[in-house]
Image 1 (cartoon, rainbow, N blue to C red):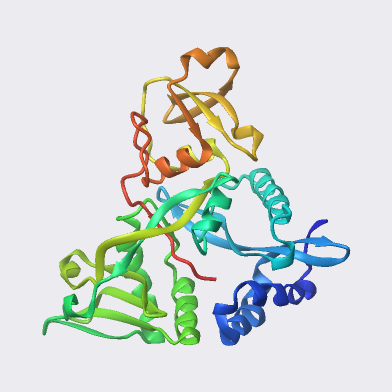
Image 2 (cartoon, rainbow, N blue to C red):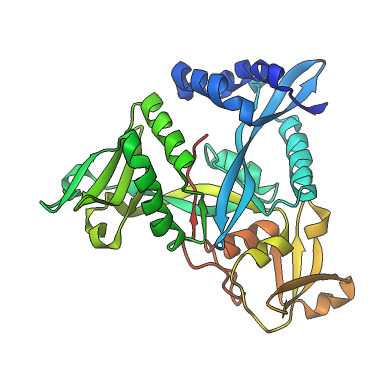
Length: 338
């Protein structure tokens, strides 16, 4: 049986969480279950009254196409080792994705723990939309000059840090988490729990950048164009975040997308039937109009794509040859935090 845990029941999912995510450690797990889980939803698959699988759903505010919208971060996907391979997680995903569509969500995202899990998520319509850049070796890292100082971020810095981040990130990326004050308060708590660092760059008392390091890796780095030479990010990258379009029409309307040529698209969606089939795409009265059409248009199809391929193209990660550009390359900027 698939069901949503009540607040007082959510602690029941902790043994499964600890079983699946041993690397998180007790301090972080205590922090999550004592301080954060009340704000999240926990969907479980129960067999004979016992939780065998669980998925945590974390509400997030994102800026997508210059519009603030609420989406869901899928987190903590886990099954007891003895119960894996029985389709319990699949049942949960089919339910939650359907629910997201009914709630008119635009898209959802997750961070796979490895390539094996990424292959599973692809079967639900997810695809990579963001890479994570590897940190430069120590000998290649440049230090600030006498005019730019770097120091630990204090609570008193967070308002100004939020203002800087909003200006820097929203103009650079098409999709990002809302860089409001609450975002940096949460990140600072996470850094303290994980024993990381959160540094800011200051030039003439003005914040011009920040760098967050957790587990000896760069969690997030944003620098003003004037100090990009101080970046510790190398050109090497690895696949990181996966996303899935929930509502195609809403997603296309969210972004600055103009293409006046009428096109027929065949989309394969393994879960959401409303996204599955043949669509006529037009630019109509200032926005994209997507209209479902009959199979009789099969011989007129311009593009035959999966929902995952379409998402990867829309978010600027992997292009569909000939399909109009929606977001520029590397436009998705969302990192993993609870």
